[in-house]
Image 1: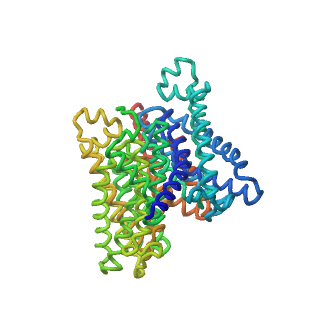
Image 2: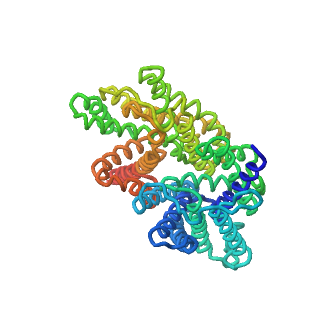
Image 3: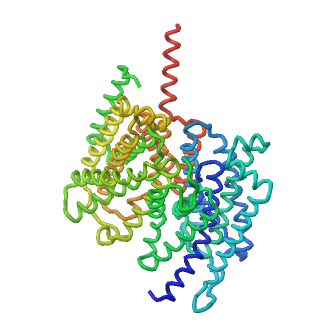
Length: 290
Length: 312
């Protein structure tokens, strides 16, 4: 491996990592507020990818303009799942189990809906072919765009959680639901909003993903696992950790893809996930709790 | 459920019927029952780990695939007889489940669930890329299964064993330990339950049933490739059957498996392209309106009827 190839792989890894980071933020947010994982997360990613693809090929809509459409769709799905399903799960010892099973059911409903609407083929959006050459390195235009958009959305989310009242309410609920409730925050509403936001972030990531890779309806589970793996590697509840975890996974996949095969790269997320959980369960950046 | 005389008669009739079907039934019926038995067996497997404890596995299909590949490889490369190959597949699954469970069962809730999802992905990746063993995406062809009847009896035996083992566990101290883990793992540990050992035993035992089902399935199909060895839609169906019948009960998986297989055959076969949507929807509906499943519901009604009878 020449130094140039090494640098090139690092660049590609960072760009992929940016999109993975965006994917994992949704999982992280929902986990923080509710302690559950949306198993349909990856399927929202794929659904948004297909919506973007459809708008682009059929109606000629610029993928960047299609982004708000995807985000609105993701938000609506998440909102409905929380409002009509998860919010009604009795909060006893079986709550986590029931929530997981419910989102598992939703996951297959989404997969099937995407298959019926858009077909079962692999699709991608050829929006910006070609690449920029800077200092002997190739920056594929589509990847650079996806990375920058992911960075912008992540920053917006960070600012929203840090500065807006609603964002701080979400933060408060994730720290202590009782405390937040005492301060007059409507927990039920905050949860619905967070779950919607989590799915909206998945949708945003999906709309960007389809510019980089070809996707097919059944691929969602792989992205649910990746998003969760990133969150675990970085440490649940840690914003910089999630971004670092995403870079680790992006690099690992790009390097195994180059050295071995793309198929093997698909299994890397699980191996990293297991390695981190066995050696450092709180994640590379996470706070140590019980 | 109590072993009332009526229940015993029902069980005896069911067993006799299962033995008699291959002599009188059509190939279609035998094939249908064979598939139903495979699903019922898998539902019992899921029930052992995810019904009794709170560890929801979305990756039992990984053991199905291990069993399928074990049979394919042993039969096609080493020309083993299929019954031994099926048992060897169950053994292989248990051997893999032991270290896997050791690592995974220290993870709770979503960690375990997502870990098992990830494990399926890794196996799929291995099956597609380890060509010297699995022939990758090209798949392994087996000699045609021919007579379906021996396979039918093997599947029926598997279901009988699954019911017997679940029944024995349900009334044993081991079953009680598993339930206590499902209720409150920390409390169970505090009371002296060796939780890791119990969970691991249940996990390893639970892995053998889908492995046998996968082996029988592969031999029947006489072809194995990555997507037929790890069919995601089976995972959904099996989980649906177990929770519909009643997770954590002895008879739930049987009831759920038989009822839903019949419904699937009668109704859903016409909506083949809607299968996943319907399975997903059913899971959500069952969890929403009947979270305990059918068997506890029946049991409660029976108890209520008995009380009314006493009062009279």
